Image (cartoon, rainbow, N blue to C red):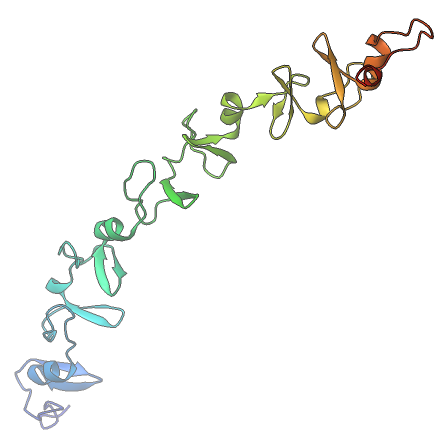
Length: 236
């Protein structure tokens, strides 16, 4: 570049012995460059001149000293941050303002940490535990009660009823007989082993019998014909 050509591209002032800035291979004096090309700071609204750092985020610009958390005013330079409603927030302020609160401990669930959701509420993974064994439930099956959530083994241990016949858990339904519970399919006639859940039955010595077996085994017999006098006949 010749001496005659080494002038400011905008004001044509000589740049010999002066500071200048190259823009698209064209030289500008500092004052012209700042006036034409400087971005304006989002915080203070002043131009970010060539001798200052220009911090950019999503086509918005800040002076280094103006790049702060909107809420606590701590510097965000070289620190993690998040944006909400066009505001920049440090991770702590963002968490306090925007993150979910744990239903158990009431503390903020920090961004990036794993959280559990159940019935519209959120828990830290380590707070979402079985009320009985206190082990994290995670994504395992659970049963919820008014006083908390239970993993299936603990729920069965604490609340479930067991069939008087097979000793297995009655998960739904069931038959109550003499203060004992039975699976519907386990409640059988003590004589012929027919299912009684949809049948009329009688009890003898705390054992259930279908009407046929009861009449056959225990009904009184007619003195004349010796045939059983059935319960139906006696009740007429």
